[in-house]
Image 1 (cartoon, rainbow, N blue to C red):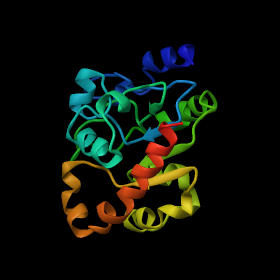
Image 2: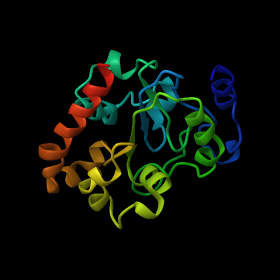
Image 3: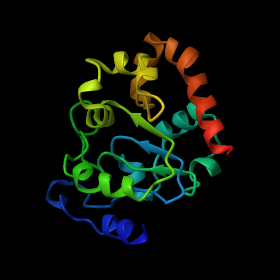
Image 4: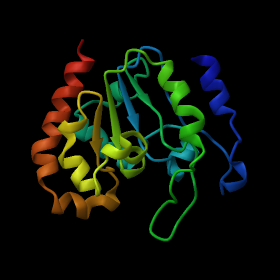
Length: 191
């Protein structure tokens, strides 16, 4: 695993397309039980090298009902984005994750994590990539049908403050789905 992570950290595969240059952000271990697959680092995460070290991460930890220490315990939780580097700014937020990363690195990483019990697919990019034809037409449909993808996958909306309107419109998510998520996460991590 160390050799693979070193390769990823040194990756410059798509550096020509990265406005801030390459700075791959990933955390993984052979003992991880939960894998969080998000989109791509934002500028704050790019600067610090700490995944989910922003308001989105605060909201995600609240949904999971776990502490920062547990969230960043790489022996239990792996964090692998769809794009490992900050992709740049778009019209309404950050650009999509670079398409090269997941095909280049994900399968290699997953093969090194035999103890995974749950993969959280955060946002439409992760859901489309992993759920393929089983992915529903909209993120709302996919998330509301989360049980379809269990026990392996748990699709979630992105916890970004930009998603506050989606969360306000879909109160069922925090009322009905977040408690199920918390129960699964605690059950897995307490083994």
